[in-house]
Length: 308
Image (cartoon, rainbow, N blue to C red; front, top):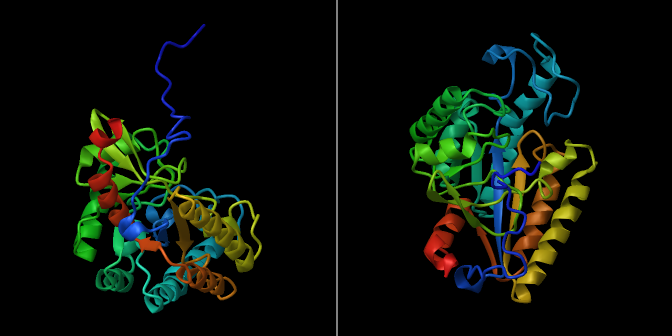
C-alpha cells in the first residue's frame, strides 16, 4: 500500500544549479573552524545518568550500567584540562576566527574556559545542555534543556548564542530550537556544502551544514584515521578540491570539526597547525565563524530571493 504522506527528506537540494554564494571580497571558499566543548556534559552517573559514556573516547568500550568508567572520565578531562587550551593557543596565534559549540553543563563546570571564550571574541553557539543522544528524550525535558543552554551561555559568555548544534538530535529538536527563537541557524545536518533554507512550523529556517568527514572524530569514530597526519591529509585534500571549485566559479564552504580530547593531544595538534598554515597560504579564503556565514546568507540569499 502506497504511503500518501509527504516524504520528509530532501534528496535533491540545489542539484546541478547551486547558487553563487557571493562570499565577501570574492572569496573562493568559506572555511568554518569549529571547536566542540563537551567535557563534563557527557553521560556519567555523577550527572544523574544510568550509564557511563562510550562515544568519542580513546579508551572505547561499552557503556557501564550504573557505574562510573574512570578511564573514560579521565580521557574527557584531558580535553578540558589540556586540549582545549592547546587549541585556543593555536587559533589565537594564527588569528583564526572560529565557532565554539558549547555544551551548557560542560561550560558551567569550567569557569576558566568560559572566561577565556568570553574574552576571545569567538562565536559560542549552543551544543545542547547535555552531550547526550536526544533521540528519546521527552519533548518537555528537551525544551527545558534548550532554554537552559541558552541561559548558561548568555550568562557565562555575555553574548546570547545565535547558533545551534545538538550533534545527536531527536525528532523534535529543530522544531523546539525554532520555537525557542533568537537563533540565526542550526547545523544539525551534513547534507550539503552550502547553507540552505527549510521550513519549520511555518517559519523559514536557515541550516548551515556541518561535517563528520573533515572532523577529528574520525580519529576515534570507526578508527579510520590512525594519526594526525591522516587527518591533515584528508582535510588538505578536501580544502584543495573545494578551493579549486571556487576558482572555477563554484564557491562552497568547508567545516572543520575539532575536540580538545582528540586533536588537542600532543601527537595530533601539529596536524591542526599544518592544516591552518596550508589554508592561510591561499588567497581568497574567508576564515569565519558560522554566525558570519548566517548573516551573509540572510542578507544575500533570503528565502524570497531564492524562490525567484
